[in-house]
Image 1 (cartoon, helix red, strand yellow):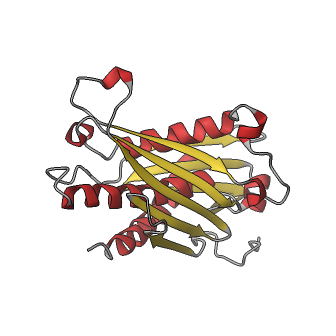
Image 2 (tube, rainbow, N blue to C red):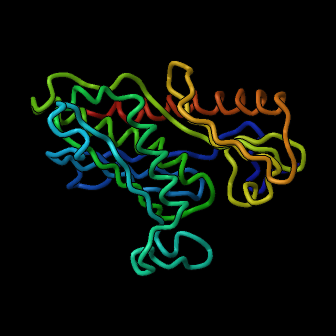
Length: 241
């Protein structure tokens, strides 16, 4: 099967991360993965949720939204509808717990870092792009807090990135675009740390169950792609000074 964008089945989409994309955020990036584009911006608040008050620990949370014309057909703003879609809630919780997994929250003091992920254009993989870009924006914010002496040391314990893999017409593919994702028989979103540990695995058989062998092969394919994402993150962060 020839992929719609001409890639090999185990090839990433073209990826570019622009660090410091927004001037006023403590950390920010524009991550572009194929036609998918997501702005991730980090804000620091000198407070924590009620369940953490007085415990000396910080918190990391995320908010996720999609601009109305990020997709082919206009999607109404959730604020206008008066409610947040279940999909948006699920994705922002995923982003938050993923980023918390690689940060020592006790080193933050009683501060909350809010990671806003806004999808400018969507062509599949928006949640994984938000995680990969969100980590870079978060790292920049924590780096700046450390340089300013607000934090005593960098609280980051490792890197984290995410990617989608799936089976389309019986073949395994790395990083599905929308057309592939829409037709996928099996669809996985995989989140990993740079030590090779999994933070989250979301896997679905769209029409029928799938085997352990399929699971293992897709996880190996995802790991291959995520290792490349770590190098791209590292290159973006190398510009910090």
